[in-house]
Image (spheres, rainbow over the protein chains, first blue to last red):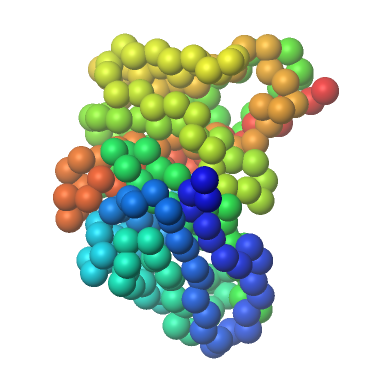
Length: 110
Length: 115
């Protein structure tokens, strides 16, 4: 079973560039979310979705956009990358509180 | 919003030693999850606790939930190098905004096991 698939695993961007982090799950979960992980700060919720067509902001949404056109996919877009967005990003798919995480994307913005 | 505080932030133990990691919540715990993360990898689900006094074990890892103290502890017996990694607790907040069952995470405990 694929579970949650995140791509790419690594990415280097220049300040001001835009990009999309892809996330797909094959478990038919309604709830999906994006987190960023920074040293000493644990996981912080960026955006989440409770189903296709429905998204909402988490704790640190600024600089990120999401969409949920299908149950399977939940891409995260960085509109204009900033060095402060250097982080490890995790996508998660959740059912009954148990979260299944992707392998993460290590993003560096120079 | 619910906050989770983990202690210690980092821990270095000799192989074979026992250790405990704590996770304390600022609000009532309705569901507490423990995850393990190895450097550069995703999070692996360890166990879920839902009832006060509940205790679960998997191999040499035991987790307990103290509802009154709003706290959970993760205990590793006879630690091994394979136990090294970051341990995160996550709490299920059914009353979080938007009625979405969001998980709030602690900041993690970095465990190093010396051979």
